[in-house]
Length: 128
Image (cartoon, rainbow, N blue to C red):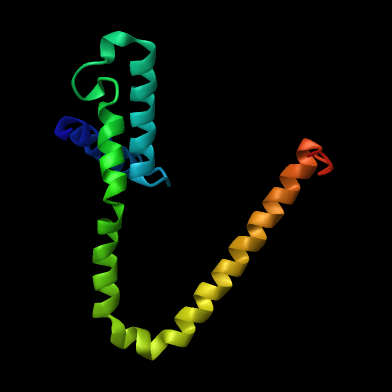
């Protein structure tokens, strides 16, 4: 599991290096996990790659262990919020207004995208 976890982190690091070297406006971890996806698809296609951390179920097991403990990754964010309570008290209404506005705009953009996609695909919405 340590080797598979290391592979996940190496893919993330590789993505970060490529993004910083090329200057692509994509987060490094996204590019790294695309590379991991390519590795896993290649492993499934060619059985000769299914060694070490790429053996069947190894990366999947490591990722399940990460997901099982995902809540621990929110602890630093919570500590950061508690450390900045004075700023939140001073600017709380402005922060709340920005968060509420961003939620509404996100919902409107999602609905607009859904409606536009439905029109482009010719969906009438009458089908069960």
